[in-house]
Image 1: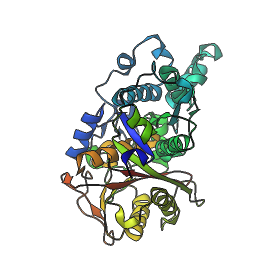
Image 2: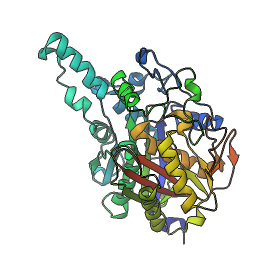
Image 3: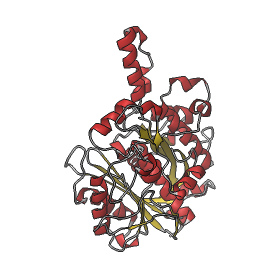
Image 4: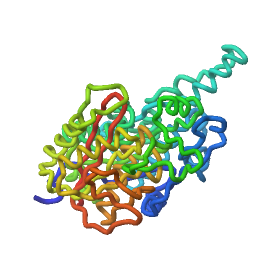
Length: 409
């Protein structure tokens, strides 16, 4: 089988994360293995006053142009990531058949900060103070729409919302659009920016967030014995996907192959996963079947690894049962926090980079696994490993499970 026969290829990546505003800065930060969580002035006075924001980047200047005023922060993040990815793929919107280009951008919360700001205006000054752009700035599909406008993409433009699995769902949908011949190029990923007091207070009230207010940088601890919740973050990641044969025919350079995707639903609880991970396992097994892999052929797992007691225990049960040969495991949320809908796309990029670089980044703040957690977690420093096949997990409130199977080119 030649490279061109192997289905769908990742030909470009782009991302803006708390750990770096492009793939090189992100990868360096991920491999350093240190959390970027910090206290945030806008969260002062809350029971949890820290997060992982995107720092050091003027989003308005980076986006540029007159249209920036109509975009919420999550849209700006997505647009910057998409520009990086399209440039990385060596593509130009001026050259492609726009009717054959799709956009699939997962978003969970949308422009909640815009909603809150306008609610204050309504309460303080009345309905005349409400922005006429509130609705188009707030709705979660705004990012997919703005990307389509920017890229002149006239194929399907979709905005799947599967909570924290949204970015991975977008990539899975993109693969389907390509394999079914509905698109020739799909720009896919996820974006989220919800670091507002309302959202953070709500997550804290439900007990989802770490309460280590005295040690923000030590708070996100995937799989650790003393984990106590996630650290909320923001960011965006976008991948350009093409059929491998098409990419090779135009002289493109596949960075990795997306050989299988799988989705399932726990149908169990609004926020808690099934304790044994059987629901998530169905998604992973579906991805393996589509890839044509046996579980023992998987070299590496990019775990969802939220640092919450329930998720990490469930994911450990799943990995231990399905992959008893103990592939290496990493969890980027230890460094960049939980970026909600963007996390699956950010971690997909991390998986692509692991395949390319032959390096598995360490899990931040993981000193000791709980008794009974039989995982080969990479800790302290990056591990050099030739990874041929890897699986990335994403799970979301509502019981959504998505698995992506990537293979080295």
